[in-house]
Image 1 (cartoon, rainbow, N blue to C red):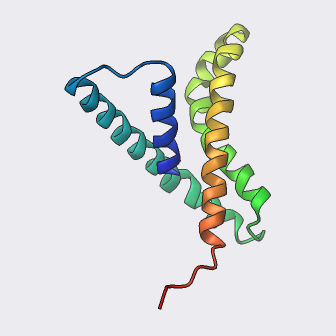
Image 2 (cartoon, rainbow, N blue to C red):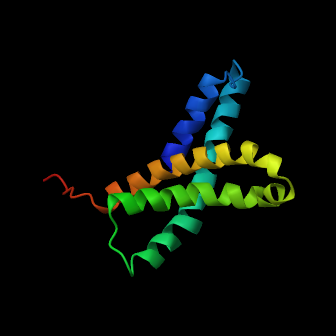
Length: 126
């Protein structure tokens, strides 16, 4: 999931021309990737693994449950962070929910990657 979030950061930066040319730009890009990796790793460890541990007692992990769990892991933290603003004014919903949904989609990619890694049948090469 961390690699996915880092890739999304690079793509977003390239599309918005957010990178600065030269050595400073490379340093900023490296710092952004490192920060994104750490945040995504924290989300996976703090939210994803406990969610998997709690739900795996009752349900077998399948692709659709992994997607739903990944969406929740991506969607919930940002929405919870913006909840005071959402409760204050109904006009703030259109500004927060698209970002939350986008992060939920990134979480779905992470959930799919988690499902694929759990269900991989790879054997070591002889």
